[in-house]
Length: 199
Length: 350
Image (cartoon, each protein chain N blue to C red):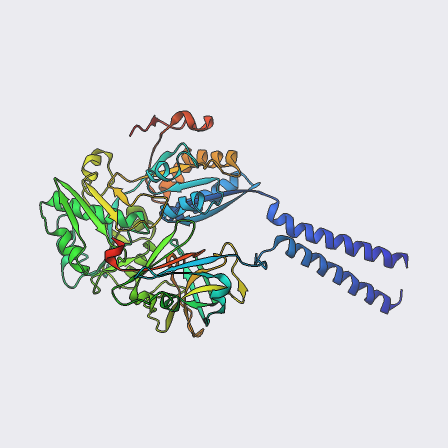
């Protein structure tokens, strides 16, 4: 057989194998990134009782913040760091009257999960950890955001689609982690409260 | 030309086989999904390996969380697991009955200790009669896990009020805990009972106390000298080769003999963190519970794994990894799968 023909058939075979591989990957869908439209609302409640409901698209239309962040679970499983994009939680609170040092912010999800954040935390005061040793390493420039994009793609269901809290830094030069319990998945309610009202 | 056709056909077959291999790699073995409390991570890692050795056709997938969060993965997030093991067996009936489970076997226990290292201030001085004085010293820092996230955290806040009663010293909670929060953390004393109310943001002032999400962070803090002492489970201290101080059984939550004493200490979360679980925790002896959820995708295999955990070999693996075991006891013995009934020595009546 001519060398050229053999080479051509070899290319065809490689292409077929590649197509098969792609088909397998598509079947397994390891990244699980959904592409369909997002029907999701977030209810914002101010400490004065003001209430506002934002759609997912309205949140995406707000000025975004991009940063890097990762977290670890209760048993020390490291997730990330990821490149995250979203809206600062503080900006969302501003839409219902903002907050001051006497307030806390409650962030919750339809699965019944609730996390409370102090004023300082909403402004980025979180403990940060070295990703290899879990040694506490102070890190400036942190922002708590409501994330809708992770590593350039919409969140998967597993990662909290469509909206999840994330603690990020604008700099990617130093890898750090925060505690995973603050990364609330499936966020649908943000409430600014005062301790008296909380009780 | 015929040869060329053969090559193309072979290539197509190869592609199909490769695709199938990619897929079957994920589906070839039976999956057994086990979710468990974080303090079981080391012994359950070994149980996983031993079970897989005995069952080469089974791939055990393990996942650790805080006990409440582990249950919530099943009840609230609606994920499916074949086995769940938690560090507070009372959470199973409270959070899973009757929809997600109707039996639970107690299989292990633990005790609260104070962990430390050779570098800890006063390491050679601390003992079971002066620990609260040592911890109160200005040059000593200590930590415990957040009661909102970790059973070990609310157990610490039960242990310290119980110490007031045991040592006859009504200032222990104030000196160790209350005054290190702003406003001071309230301890309500009422007719021999103690209730600690945890505020919605549980952050101490100053650096005397370190409150962290769990033992991972506390052990790192101990290792790096960020704190001198940390409250934790004896099994965890041993697994990480830390020094530890054993406390009197009357306060360490280890002994069923002191159940009534433990009941006098309560911790109330100041807000409903999870809609699916009560905000009040009552002091009890530490028991680990295990069950097969009703929605387990592979319940027979789940029961087989529970059987393995409760078997002589399973108990030996737990003990070898410093996880103390107890003779298995269960509630609702009539609901337990038949092939587990013979390992349960008695029915729990509470």
